[in-house]
Image 1: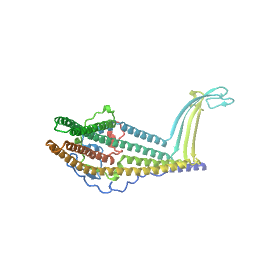
Image 2 (image 1 turned 135 degrees about the vertical axis):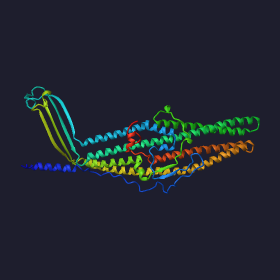
Image 3 (image 1 turned 60 degrees about the vertical axis):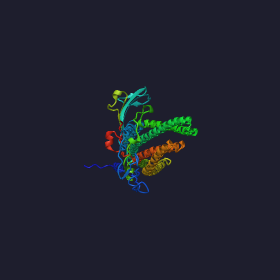
Image 4 (image 1 turned 45 degrees about the horizontal axis):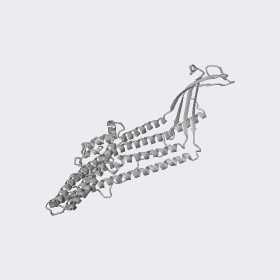
Length: 508
């Protein structure tokens, strides 16, 4: 025989069904990845397929490979084992990496904690109270008892509570925490990329300064010898005092420049120590010369859409936009009704041994619906604030993309101009060297004065330093381009995670 459900029961069932039907939706906007700029190149005019070449060491032409991806360990393209070792040491020991890894682990644990909101909360409790009541008879505590004297009440029980995620507020909160974890994952990749680029750049700068110091020291040494000769020639009357003064002036000028170069070299080495995760006193590196570093002959130039999907700072900005979008859903759900189910079961007795015996039990179960009615406009303005935050996050993403494209364009054009500059500087250095040789020969036969020789030596020294700096610029700008293109790291690369390489959260 079919039992009829009372009217009140049918209403309750209908309400429950309605809430369950709504439980599958989540209020607020759904996140959509912003569209990348509709461009197929980074510069106004298409770049040449290759840079110019210069007839000197490090002057080979570089070819641009459009649409090619940057390798993850891009620094190996420079072909120097010591440089590779430095980068790997930095990635393994830098506190900056350890901090970024810890921040990611914290964000991932926060996501797991947020997921707990989808499940009922179950709590157990136990306690004892000593109290006194007068003029009443107590029952249900394991027998009759007069409350005229102090007595103990023992209790134990469990309670359960569950908030139905009808409008998806909890799920939007989890979505926001997931996005926050993606921000930290992208920041970890950015830490790897930036640290590797900094180590490469500082190492190249150190090599450049080593050569500049050696060149300046040789000039000082040569001028010291020439001053001694000039003094002897002045003593025997073959040269005038003005020649000696000219040498002394040039020597003093060269000697002043040398400490500054050595200070720059020491500061660069101290910076390298910080990148490698050691103190300056603990720095243990092998010298690198520019001749030992290979200029990459082919340069991959990723498509703009690839840079948007790959570059860590753009990925972080996209994840921040995702979190801000989910926050709008959380604020919207806060304005809507909340359905709560609660229940409890337990026991009370005058003696702990009487707990859970017949006549000591108690239980409750209930539903609760809470609808915000008036909060002084707080909830409405919180929603509007979340919407403004979403708009700000979108604008930030757009700005980060524009800056990234500017970085790539600057680096590409720098490589083109660096090659042309090196060609001119190499020609100037070659000509200055020939002029110095010619002037020295003329000086030996008395055709020119000592001032002419010093001028030729100054011109050659300036050209030599310019050549060192120009070669360094080609190498450092190549590293800058690799970094600007995103460095080849993807936060979701499972192979990297399995091997504890950049892109994973594991500690070495």
